Length: 216
Image (cartoon, helix red, strand yellow):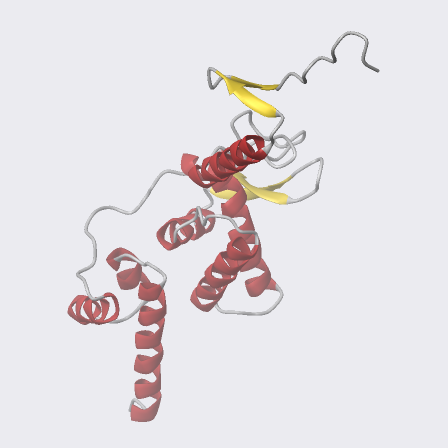
């Protein structure tokens, strides 16, 4: 006979897990896969937590996204945290997943960066690793481990941090910072009494008055 107290504790754990995932942005497909709760209960729980109905549509399914420059760095960071929690700390799979994603978000905030890896992408990444479609490869320069397609030759692999592409870091936040810096430089120039603008194209020093002949 099933222990009613144990069953109650198990149900409470399932509800708390669902709430944690919903708060982090999980889609309904993730909730249905990772919890034992019914679809109707998950829908009610989602509306209660988020105040809206869950979004519709398919989850991301391509492995190629995780190999592009910025997503690869963020995905590698997240999976490295997850791997340490499971292998060194002994955390269970889904608990380690939630903790790893929270730690990833905290690290991104500490670096004053934008989170590139959403929770649903992170969950898909985990499933790709479990299916053997992705694996970690060691960079020959920094010796960090980064997400790669499984069975890809990586003898001379160099990561995107050690060898960034030409347009690396050209995000909207970076462009906004550059714009603010440019506006600050314009203000500094306009406050200099010895500088004036010519056709708003370049700044040149204002000519000093010449001394009269015979004056020392």
